Image 1: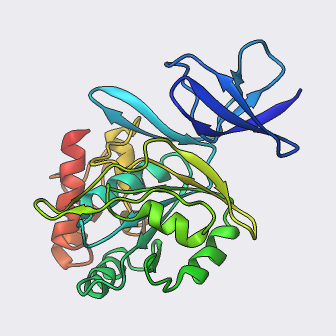
Image 2 (image 1 turned 180 degrees about the vertical axis):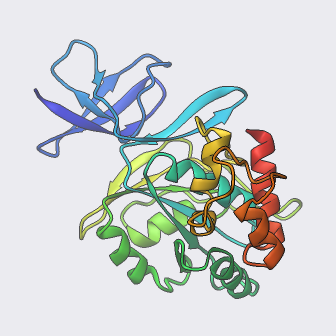
Length: 282
């Protein structure tokens, strides 16, 4: 079987790289379901997608949007301008862990005045449960360290709100990528949507990056209420001492380990409130 991997998707056309590194264009139906990262059979009359080992997807207006497939890691690119909501990070982390994808947080724009405190707050919140990097795509600070980390992971998709600097970060990691970047709207501190298609790029020392279009929100797909706590960073440590009831949702049940941890301060109140809000949405 001759196979390849989709490296770009342009609506009704995809670019596929075969096992020899040759890139070939193919026409596909607009609703074909193909995404960047998909392995495909090049020998069939129509481009046939091979089974995925995982996928990063979200709910959009009651429909499922698959962002990328066959991933080893998700790099959540955040910034203070525009401010990335903490709930957005939690939601992407849950979506990643539910698919057995490693999440990491990349705090971009370390040259901005308030970034140092934002970075420290994230480190305190997640308490070594997740790798967190502070970088400046603009000045190049800590880019080499991040690049070294990414080359050892495999395939990483960058996701984040528009304006967080995903494309700038890719350009810093791969200067020849030459991705378009946008400006921040001063009136609302929101970024402009510059990346319109997902693209797979290879790091020189190994590893791959997928740059994805910016998104404003993220709602995980196929995470049941009883599963949420096991994917919510920090909760799994507390649940090593199980709750009284196996079907505990950690909302108001008696002898709940999570509620006890909130009361004792082991889990911060605002972090628990994020969990409750996510549970309501589920």
